[in-house]
Image (cartoon, rainbow, N blue to C red; front, side, top):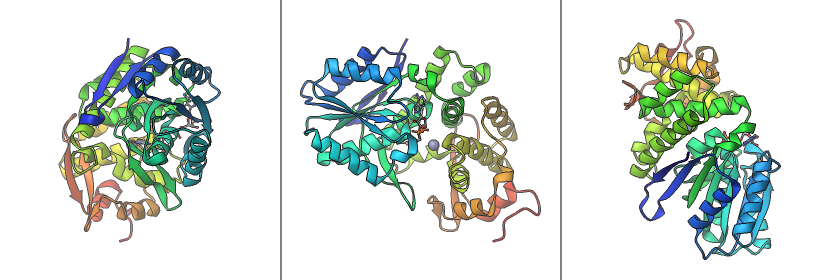
Length: 364
Ligand SMILES: NC(=O)c1ccc[n+]([C@@H]2O[C@H](COP(=O)([O-])OP(=O)(O)OC[C@H]3O[C@@H](n4cnc5c(N)ncnc54)[C@H](O)[C@@H]3O)[C@@H](O)[C@H]2O)c1
Ligand SMILES: [Zn+2]
């Protein structure tokens, strides 16, 4: 079975297809999305994925279906997210003669699809692109919203563009080789969607734990994509509503950066969600029962939940410069009940008082 989730963005609308697909089926979906005028397809592939039989099969199936298909391999994971790597990719596109009617397909985790999307956004001032995400995180998060980009020394994702894909095909077959830790990190973003908008996600994950049958995994991915799709359709360029997707990310981002990226993004979000729920309970914006529910579910999914020992001076410094900071306060997404959200600005001193044991609070 497959599930198709529309991302309704007017002229830029597209579908995210979730299921287990044959390579020719993926190629057919991409060919239809790009249209008959396509002159070539550049498959931009994560270096950790390129040698997988499923990736090779996709290259072959695309070559059989579309003209000018060639694959270009990126360094695996985050290493591809630099302007230097973008230069390599766009020079390759130019050297191969890809023109304005050509298309880019990003195949890999969120790093590779962010890179591929940004290369497609800037090459010849923008050509068509699509993604075939191969990590759970990329399937549920990077697949929707059209954010593309790379990192700078000064920080992650500081250079980029909004460039919507023509299609996304999330082929669950790729998840067979994904390390368990990466899979758990993706589940954290799925659980986030459960808390902010779709409590059935929480029920399903609680019923099955980490051993998710393929049909349940497909439903969880589809539901999480659905949540993000609805939010993004309301707020394509992040003016307002899209802020709810930052649940767990305020403290999460600070923990992730302070760990020097030892923590995976999803692990940091897991910790950040528990922290936000804990803060909500302390401020009376959410029930304590929800903190316990989150700790128990995330723990069962092999995700970290014990954020308190990680609240180092560096974390507090990073929270203070959080880009969501307004004046003297930091904006938090709270969950008063599963599926509901409230945005509220909280003073750093109140955060410290709620999240640290007496005597452990940071110096002002
Ligand atoms: N554009 C967006 O809206 C958006 C949203 C969330 C995250 N992101 C970005 O996504 C990136 C994180 O993505 P990620 O969590 O997918 O990690 P990743 O892309 O860094 O991949 C993690 C590792 O898994 C490997 N891998 C990928 N697929 C595999 C598979 N099927 N089998 C075995 N190994 C595989 C990769 O080679 C890499 O080593 C970050 O750069 C983040 O900024 C973007
Ligand atoms: Zn996230």
